[in-house]
Amino acid sequence: MLYLKTDEEVGLLKESNILVSRTLAEVAAFIKPGITTLYLDKIAETFIHDNGAIPAFKGYGGFPKTLCTSVNDEVVHGIPSDYTLKEGDIISIDCGVILNGWYGDSAYTFPVGEIAEEVRCLLDYTKASLEEGVNAAVAGNRVGDISYAVQTKAESGGFSVVRELVGHGIGTKLHEPPEVPNYGKKGAGPKMEKGLVICIEPMINMGRRETMQMRDGWTIKTADGKPSAHFEYAVAVNKGKADVLTTFKFIEEVLSKM
Ligand code: MG
Ligand code: MG
Image (cartoon, rainbow, N blue to C red; front, side, top):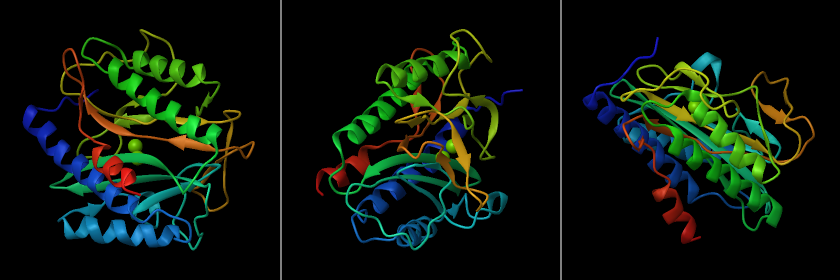
């Protein structure tokens, strides 16, 4: 069963997701060669607490940190560590918070200094595939319409879509029904109605789509060792056009000054 949120509940989810957006922007200012992923984690944890919220990932299923930091061929769920970022890396930062009992969850993949043109293209297509997914997240459509839109855009650039991990509903739990795959068929899956709030989060690979899990029990990497990108928005389904509860505006203001 899908839980539909009232306008007031969507407003609360928006507050949580805007805090995630602002946290990612706070972290963005520190992303440069020489910084460790653990340092970025501390920045995020402090900022979330200073804003009256709780890091949602820390302790979730035993995850040890505030952020998921996934570098280069790491797809998602990388654990912040003493790894030092270097010029040409990309880093996906996924962040979750709980504010007033409601969850926020969003991700952005950042370049570290100058990156290769083909890697820039992977980031652009992954973000564009997320936007295509949002355009399909309207009342009366089915979840498969989002999946199809994301997959079509990503594959049009010659990239491949990770199958093992998917988007999800969000509310007073981090993961609620429905699952939101990044691949699929138009017209398939549950019908969406106004008030459904979902996270759309394409994970797109430069090479083959297969992934593997590392022995730390968390980190997912591409099987072929090529880079992977990940962007995530929380969106409230509405009539005509989805209400995107996340914004990349704060992040991109920071990046434009770097
Ligand atoms: Mg998510
Ligand atoms: Mg996330």
